[in-house]
Image 1 (cartoon, one colour):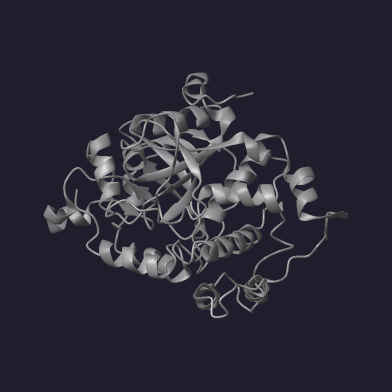
Image 2: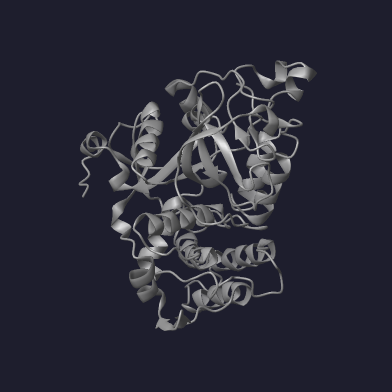
Length: 401
């Protein structure tokens, strides 16, 4: 399977920008603009099988915070599932806290670990557990005159500051570096209020999380699939944005989609992380699949029609999935939110996926991602343990209410 010829440059730019830095995210979005066919929407007939209620599409702007937008969108759908009135959770409050933790980790690791905007789905759960949550209306992160997130300058400041700390010029670190680092973040994003009013009641981030959002962070589990680790046991997900070295459970490739299907049919949405830097991913047309034919060998006419209606797909195997990950053809470059299941006019199933790039494509911020794409290009999924089947929970040795 041939992938983007720009893949090596994407990899380099992502690493330079802290994997999901604002520059890298902008480059990723721009690199996908040529992936489209004219009048694509007219050639697909999608019929929803499951479409779970979710909150309006957001725009992460020029920031690498897709992980926070997607996983907080997931938590908002969890609120709806639990019968609560959903509230837009501040994505940048989550990100701000992750930046603090990431900086501490970076210094502790002598700079030998990822920095930047990037993160993982589990970071949202971890930050919620430690720092609570805030409504977006209280903490927007827009503290420097922009209408949307624009984090490149802040990221550069943070990288320079922490690089100086790691050099340890005094021969012994003082506690003031943390104050300096936090002050840079708060200068750009805004200081966190100790308490705030929401709908006529005063909250702290911790009481807001407990009383309004109301999720239990212990109820969530992250899964992936790699053949170089034992199945049904946890392992450290070896991707750059797993800066916290969290562990995920390993399942077989086909079980990834089985788990998603079971969760959706029980009313649970799913957080998704994976690689979208593919010729078969069109943000404009809102379709993602794995073409059966190598794009490099397609004729001009075939390339023009690549998103004009359902197309044959490459058969995905565990060996092919593992190889793509091992040789950097699959990277952790984006996070989104799976909210449903649909079928095209030929009966092929696709997941309905909510993105965080605004309502700027043919499907107003959503896309249809084939099951083969998910099997091939996922790096992790996040879901409530209640969405697991009894059989899968037993395999993973997880207790489910």
